[in-house]
Image (cartoon, rainbow, N blue to C red; front, top):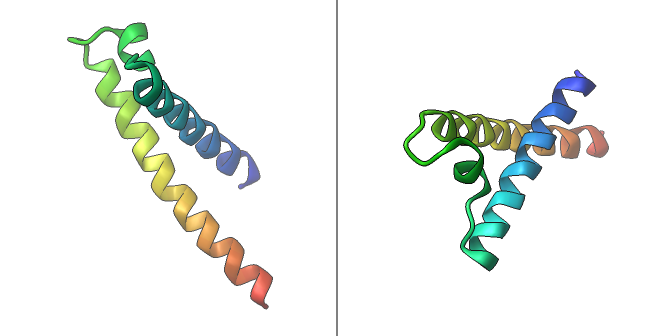
Length: 68
C-alpha cells in the first residue's frame, strides 16, 4: 500500500507543479508535452484529480491512526 500512496503523491505533486507554472508563468507543462488538441492532457488531468482525492482519504486516515 505504501507504493500506491507514493505513486498517488507523485501525481499530485506533478499537478501542483503544473498549476504553479500556470499561475506564475502562464505556461501549461502538460499541454506543452502532449499537445492542446490531444486526448492525453485530459487523461493526465483525470489521473491527477483522482490521485488528489485518494491523497485526501490518506490524509484523513493518517489523522485517525494518530488519534488512537
